[in-house]
Image (cartoon, rainbow, N blue to C red; front, side, top):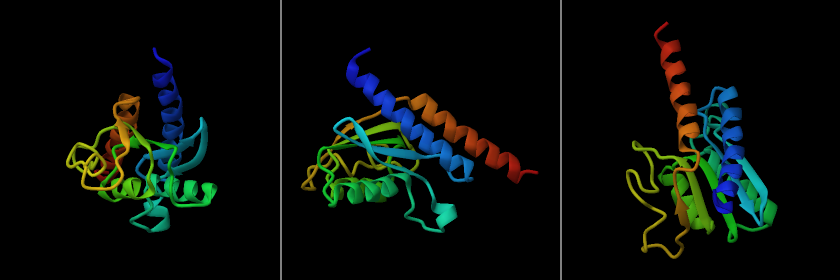
Length: 158
């Protein structure tokens, strides 16, 4: 296994831990971390239900935290690891914040905007285009989501 894949898996496991925190609050289990120079500088997990905020996605929380940590909105030199393919809002924020690279766990065939439904980040129409890698620990990321929604459906049928 090459060193890059090992690093990607290490940081994706951190994003999975963030997803599990979200799940413990009853949130959809999606997590994100932002890495610069080999160090995690920001973390985020879904908080939409708790904060009553439709923009409280894991990626946006991590992007905001990274911007504060770096003292500016340009996240050049940063890599975002996220357990589920970003939605259009998050994909747009990735482009606008100048994240260099996005590493995705599971793809989102219903709402993904980094290749599934549409591809906001890999278009030449914007002035920034991050590198994208998909499928890092995809099975683990996907199982978290499947189990969460299975349990939610089970509770609703009681």
